[in-house]
Length: 200
Image (cartoon, rainbow, N blue to C red; front, side, top):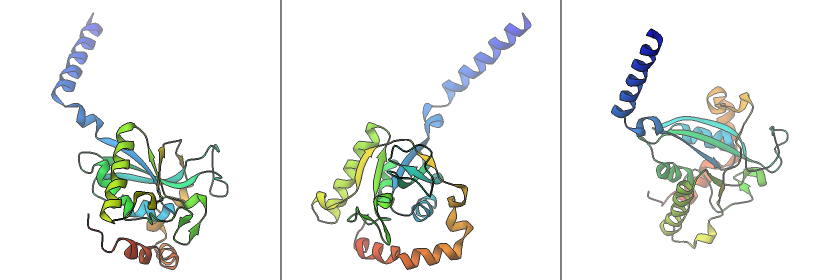
C-alpha cells in the first residue's frame, strides 16, 4: 500500500512537471547533417556557432555499412550537428553552411576531389527539406544566378556513421597541421572569392 502511494505521488509530480514546462524545453535539441568537402573543416566552421551543442565528423549518403576513412565508397565526408533550436535555427545553420562551401563545384571541394567531397544537404524530415530548398532559392537570388548553377544536392538522410576518433575535433587537436592543410588546400581564398560580396 505504501509503495502504491509513493508511485501515485511520483506520477503526480511528473505530470505537474510536464504541464509546467512546455514541450519546447524537451524538444530544443535537433540534428542536421551536411557534407561540404573535408569534414575537419566543416566541423570546425560549424561547431563555433552559438547554439551548436556538438559537431561530429563522419560518413553518410551511401549504402556501405561501417565505412572507414580507408573505405567509405558511396559515402560523403559529412558533419552531424546537434543544435539548440532555441538559440540557432535550422535556417541559420543553412546560412552558415552555404558560406563555408563552394556551391558551384560538385566534383569535390577545393583541393579535395571526388564523390566523397561533394556538397550535400541531408534532410531528416519535410520541414528540413522545405527549408533547405528555400535556402537554395534565396542563395540563387542573392548571388543573382540561376538556381541550377548551385551544385548542392538536397537529399533524404541516410545512416550517419561516426568517423574514427582521430578525426573528431581535428582542428583543435592538431592546430598546425590543420592550418597548413586548410591554407594549402585554398579553402579560405576560394570562399572569399565566392562569397566576398554576399550579405546575409
